[in-house]
Image 1 (cartoon, one colour):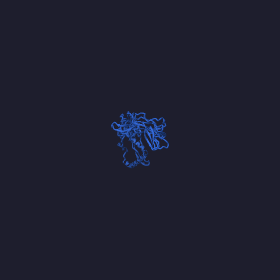
Image 2 (tube, helix red, strand yellow; image 1 turned 90 degrees about the vertical axis):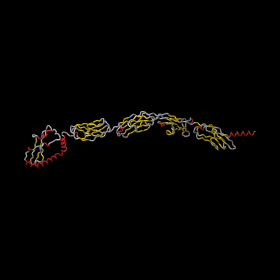
Image 3 (cartoon, rainbow, N blue to C red; image 1 turned 135 degrees about the horizontal axis):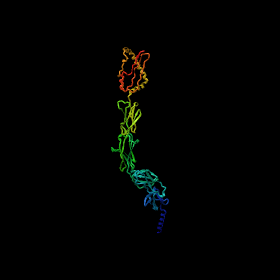
Image 4 (cartoon, rainbow, N blue to C red; image 1 turned 120 degrees about the vertical axis):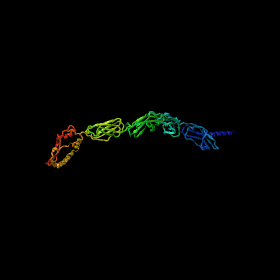
Length: 508
């Protein structure tokens, strides 16, 4: 009995001396590493070492070893202990229980938005809100935002906010954010939130024209501008011609206006137009706009109209200028030798006339110009020759001016020729011995194509042709008193009382 008591006392003392101790950190946060140490006597020998959590084996070793949790999470919280199995000469042992509570490093983030029902086209601010543990305020976090599994912005950022400049209807969907430590050990995700973008119906659709100079001109560019004053999102603009109802073009864009360009306008493009705008709610039509197309004037044609077949001094000459194409009003200008005579307007198109009372100075080239503000066009020149009551005399005088330098030589040559002729027939005239008084003038040799102008009384003129050393022939000289009318010329020539002087032919 005494022996048995001694054995029990010895075993109790040995167990206390050789008891196991589990060593663990006193404070643990998410992401921290946890090292569990099972400590016993020095140089002890074991067959097996086991670590336990909540009475469940975590890991078994065949030698003395530590147990490591690389990055602690909240689920690592629990009651831990270790145990060993000795050999035949040692006892099985179990350590004390250590309670470990893993603390939250930062809270799960919460996604907030400036508006979860923003107006289309308006901005939205997203924020990923969380809070670090007061004991770990030095930990650095980074954030990322998502929409329908797509990353927004520049992926991870140290800023917990994200600014979206404009929200559109296609941006409607589920949004969330994530926060993590820069060491990438702990990452947490917020709950998903729905953002529904509100679309505003379009209103006040209008159609405008833009053309060079403010007016639509044939051959030039035309822009049809369709715009709205309200309405957000993708707006589809389309243009129509009222006469046909067919679409001229269509554009869809994030804008309150759109343009349709016609590179070169034709005369047939004139008419009524309208446009429509639609952003998904309903299609709105603009008012109908009438677009006239102005036509530049063509090259005008100048026609001259006079009372008779010939244009004479004192006649009224009508100059008629007309451009076959061109939008009214058209201003016509009339020119004589590039000097402006006057102008005339055609308010409804067509031609215009200008009347001119002719004088002797109006001979020359005439032209006209048509202008409707889109560029002037000049006609070809039309020559006009003016004749008058003294037209033949004016022609002779003009010829005299032109031939003056050569007239004397020509006249001398003709006189010499006549002298030779008279010298040859002088003998025949002497033989006939006819009295000179019988020589008569044939009135039929004097005819006039135009009336004789009023002139002063002609004075006798004697022209000595030839040399004084030979036979001299004097020209015949007429001295005619101006009659009251040209009709009396023939009567005057037949009248015996007319002053007619016949020269004699003498020989030296």
